[in-house]
Image: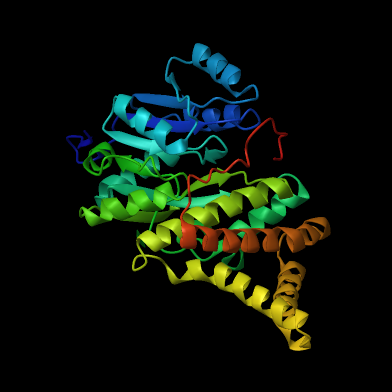
Length: 345
């Protein structure tokens, strides 16, 4: 348990960090190093829940574990994130647990700062900013979309904001007692598991908190096809989760599916011979062009890529939402990280 020193200073507690891993040869070493190099002064273990990767991920993980005794390897034969995380929670040695994904890198001081904020707020679940970054022009365009209200919405962990109670948390710093209280992650959910977990923690009286002082670098998909697969899968599961809890769903979730519906309706009108039917699609593409032209910090090549990335994200997510909302997710799996990948994927 966390405690205080005699002079009142907070004493950092022992930590378990858990990381679900599948086909992450390009990012795993950097993600692990970002944790183990934190210079955290208390005992620390890192559990790698290893799925059946098709690349060199598991070999890299084994080499890392041989070099550092703090790294624990855990087999996750089905490769599903929620199953791997729950298995890690069961074997975690310590009372505080941090989730980090293999394509993310916590900023220096993330663990210590996170534990202090958790202690100060009394939160059961704490999250910070998802600082998306890119290497290729396309990946930089996707990263820009992640951090823009016009990309994937205005959640604080995407666009920043004041510290305070939050709807959900990116990755998460947890009290193990809260995870045990709600039974961990729902293993029937393949995408959106973090949102679902946060809602269940709040329903038991727990506090979910956001702090802009915490930041984790996230490397998004760097290829069009994998971005489309990811956002379609995410949209399907968001649609499913929304129909399960319509009252608890944010209004912003309905914007992409309404966009898809308006474009389809417009095209149907256009086919019937009414030129006004082109307005929804033309208006949307015009807005995307204005966003790309005004996107700060992007090269010309990345701005051109944004013309492809934004519609891919919006329309894949929106179409997927309707599928999930109308018929359920039906175990839809995100296959956007399947197989081997280059460093920018």
